[in-house]
Amino acid sequence: MTLLKTAPNFRDIGGLPTRDGRQTRAGLVYRSDALDALDADDLVQLASLSPRVCCDLRSDGERLQRPHRWPIGAEPRVLNLSVATDIRVLMPELVSELRNNATAEGAAALMRHLYRDLPMVCAPVLKRVFALLLDEETEQLPLVVNCTAGKDRTGFVVAMLLHAVGVPDEAVLGDYLRSNDAASRASLQHKVAALLHELIGISAPPDMLAAIIAARAEYLDSAVARIVADHGSIDIYLAEAIGLDESQRSRLAGRLLVH
Image (tube, rainbow, N blue to C red; front, top):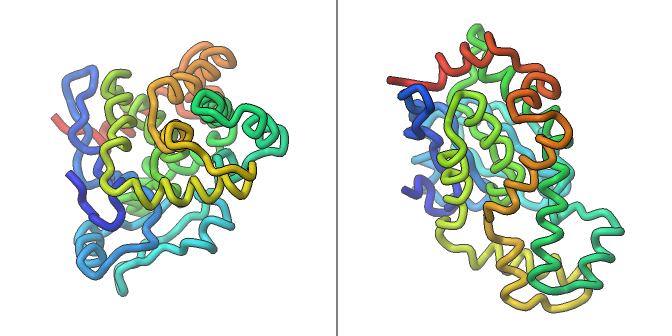
């Protein structure tokens, strides 16, 4: 269900099953693409959801180019938690690789590379997000996590959150892949096409654009493979890199899950 028609990847993570028979509670955590184009109806709808905090994972440049619109009088506290691993922030060597292999497979290889970096570059963001969710003295919920498309940076952060509260891998993947269902991908496709033309100087073919715009299991798998290689498992990654212990995970589940 699309909650905001002008932010088609805005959605509630509630209703997902956990291994112990509970499910994620609705109305507490939302994931989203950029909220810069909200129309009057969607501003009213967003106000009704009463978000307290927004964790914006976009770069400073992205935020300047597409500032969020918030309902007047219902603006959340916004935390600018820039994650600099994205197609919009490519290192020169990656641009060169893509220029030399400007194909669908070249684009997919690029995405796998970007996802392999997410566990490291998102670690500070995950620490902040978990701290917010565990803060019972200052109410931080409902909370919104967003980036530009709402699928890569946001997708990884939300996947780690869901794993932390016991959502099984297949349900985590299912939630991640729902980004492919977001209505109106034409605008994103146009923006990615323009970006690729700027970066590598060609008009990208449709299959190359599709490889970048899509949420694919192989991409999220690349991030998980990096975690396993570096830490042994996601659970150990959450403990070692994020500092999330079992007691905190139990408290987190108590806040975010329902029977």
